Image (cartoon, rainbow, N blue to C red; front, side, top):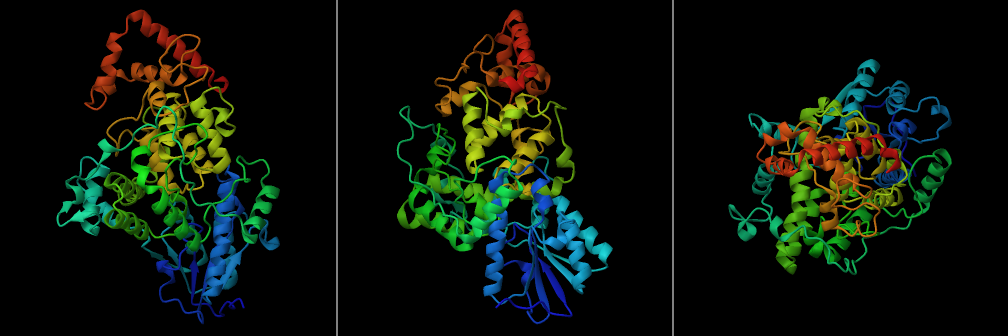
Length: 521
């Protein structure tokens, strides 16, 4: 039986689509006799950017499954379905929230901190207009609160994840031997980040895949009907949409894939969309699984089963280090991060970012798997799709919107800093020491993509010049003065001096042609 909504209503607890766990602090002290949960499916959120079909399905299915969890826990829930007839004229989340506050008239609205600055502003504005008291709660899913990160960042000339990560390791006692790191060092990059053997990656155990149940199938049909022109495919949808499935996905990764994760976390290979990666970012970013459970499971795999410390530490660094760090940066730098454009890049995103129809083999593979699965791993995002957008001088806001649209694990707090800060250097190095750029030869070293590609990674000019290589050298040429002033990039720029004046002029001509014909690459 579905619990009835109390009347009068003391507290209305708004649970957002990326806060799907019963440990939500806004649910603390919940009294079913006086309080109710509110969940809102908002069609406007699917068109805020041109969302991948799988991303829409993931959020809606996970929300509907969480509604079932609330019902089983006897928590009254007012659930606003996507296609509720009475709300068709109110597609946005703020509009639907305002309508609900007017109809239910709660004494107060309780909400856990959202994952998006825009949404926080919208909720505050709606509550104020409705005259309803608003209570925010710290998102305890994370191991570092927003105020805690602000204290760490205060007074530092540079924000560097490595130093934050070490502090988190000490604070939470993760991979520590007393006051020293297990193994005697903080990271094991020297042992990690190899390319696959020349013959290819060989057999890789499959990640967990969950066949859609009736609820998910219903959502898939809805999305196919409502958003037939949106990018992406749904034939391969198999993401975790419940807490139980997320735990299974974690166990599968730790049992079968963590051992080789470190060594090959940066490697790429055609038609190998997942490699040895965990794919747990999807469940983590919906709060279907606690990062503490993920960290404990990985740490136990080293201590109890002897899994390589290099792999275990490399994985934990992504969870306890980078994930927590990037969230802190997001909230300190918003809203300015959204409009940052250090290099004043203004070109349009190439149309093939939405179709994968390009002759560049690396981009074709990365975008193709993105459209198929809604997923690409961090090197594909940073050093393929992200790097090319930087070198091609694409406006950062268009790139950020693309990343937010096409990846199923994208929530703005994690997507925007990674794009604006890491991939595009749009914030001018606020928390990175250099732009992450390389020629096509990096991709040739880390993948098989360049074999058989019409472009040659070692050629910067000529008929078969690799666009990545051409634009890499053009980037160095255009920003020579700025890059020469930094110890991290001075060596790259020094290579320009080896080019004769005629070679530099030929490079500029090739780059101008490439930039003028981005859609035809």
